Structures are given as structure tokens and as C-alpha cells.
Length: 293
Image 1 (cartoon, rainbow, N blue to C red):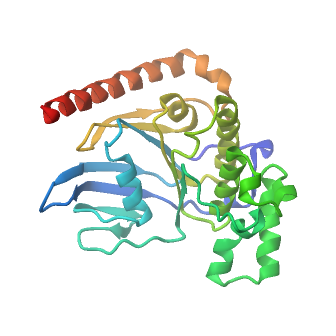
Image 2 (cartoon, rainbow, N blue to C red; image 1 turned 60 degrees about the vertical axis):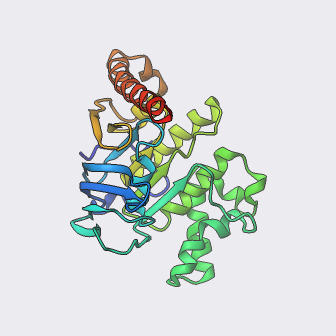
């Protein structure tokens, strides 16, 4: 569901929010088996989910439950064994289809993927230049505009990634993703290594971007509090083989501030999610003991 935004929340570009909604995702009965003729590891087993255009969905679950596998299939980095994935009703992945990354799906990783030999501006405009649709001057102008609208970051345009904090690097990566106007933004635990203060700052930055652009976002995380604070829905996955255990609708108002994490509604959802994740974590632990025996 599209929600209203205020002028103060609009960043990096207010015009993006006015475009027709794209980014509807349909994951239909997807199974992924690694090494089918050998170890036969089933990462996903009949996993299905729907994301409407503009949804912000967080995926949580025990380590090894298939969260990253699902994201890699959507990003076009990996194949699936059975099932289908659609983006805006167009087949994205199916049995026998070749993985095909595209600028309509952009991933921001936990480890970071900025080119250390490039300046911030060169990193941000890299995709624009690869497309070959803009001159260097036009790409630089657009890059500086996005940096300026994303918290007055034009002042670091000539800096190199090693000169930036981890939080600032994530901000630049998100700007680099958005400048290419993707249909869906895939975030793979981008704030995991940050301290609490920087993580809270990044939450607010991401929420402002979401409020402005309404891009479809899939957010992978181990942090339940983070998932519930940011997302419209939180999907809890089972331990391997991964499938959906719980789909929590996060009925909290936007724009969001960390004070709502003390609300009764938030705490009730957190308890529900914690119980589900703990149950799956115990299953994974018990299964591991049996496999080692």
C-alpha cells in the first residue's frame, strides 16, 4: 500500500515518488538444491511470497535458512531448481533459465562494494557511465545532485571510500543503487557490522529514502528489532530447508522514529517474531547435534 510522504522526508529526489509503481515481485514455489547429485543440500523448499510494488519486506531466520539464496536468485546471481520468480509479471527466473543480473535489481552487501580506487562521485556514477546514455559531465551533474539531496554529501564527492566511515560508505552505496533507478533494492545485512549509534542513523537515512522513492525493498537481516522497525512486513523463515514460517504485517505509522520501539504494538510483534525465530534456531541446533552424532 502506498503511504503519503511529507516534504521534509523527501530525499534524494521528490520526482521519483511520482512515477508509476514498479517492482512487484512474485516468488512461486521455489526450491533450490545445491549439488543435487552429491551432497544434495536443499536450501529452499517450495518457498513462495508476494511483494507488491513499493513494499518494504524484511526477511529473518536462522543462519543457513536460505535468506541469501533467495536474494541471489532475485538478483540474478544464482539459479533455482524448481519454481518461478516474476518481476512485474515478467519471468525473472525458472528452471533452466540463465541467471541474469540487471540494473532493475541492485544489491547492497554487508561487506561493501565500493571501488577503492574511485572517488565517491566516480563510484556513484559508475553505472550511469556503463550504460553509455550520459556524457561524463551529465553523469557527474546527476551524481552531485543525488549526493546533495541525500544529506549534503556533495562535499565528500572527491573523497575515496577508505576515507569514509562504514556508515558513510553504506550511504554512498545506496545512492549509487538509486541513481540507476532500479525496480527493487536488495539489501543483504548492510548495517550488521555497525555500532548502535551508526546503525540508528542509517535506519533513519534508509527510511527517508524509502519515504521519498517508494522503491520495493527486500532487506535481509538477523536483527529482529531492525526488521520490525524498518519494514512493512517481516517474513520469518524456517531452518534449512527454508520456507516461510511466519508473515508479520507491521502495522506501525510512517514516518518512524525509534521511540515507537517502546510501544505495545511493537513489543507484541517483537515477542511473536522472537518466539518463531527461537523455535527454528532450536530446530537447527538439535538437527546439527544429530547430524554430528
